[in-house]
Image 1 (cartoon, rainbow, N blue to C red):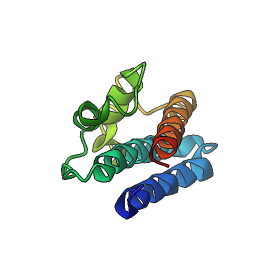
Image 2: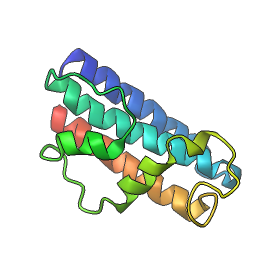
Image 3: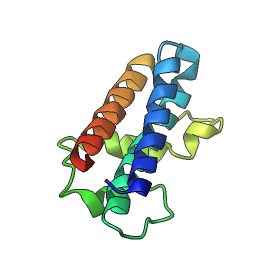
Length: 128
């Protein structure tokens, strides 16, 4: 794994550490969702970086995944799509909430956190 890819993985692992620190606080579910999005984004960018390709200056998980889908397969991309929609909304209050049914529940946050942990772990293993 090249040095910059390692840095992307390290940054993704920092987001996972933040998730672990906050996951049991029901008031922080939107922040957990944000860090889950960030962890997945950074893991996908690690793959691109490791190839020596230019990293898109975008936060679009679907775009990033389309560039690396042969390296890391996501069987159920519905969580990826949900996280993709959360990038901006997770950081600001919203009249309608972050998800169609409002702020992520604790269960929503756990699903997103587990998804992010899985992606980061799989990408790290693939690049090691």
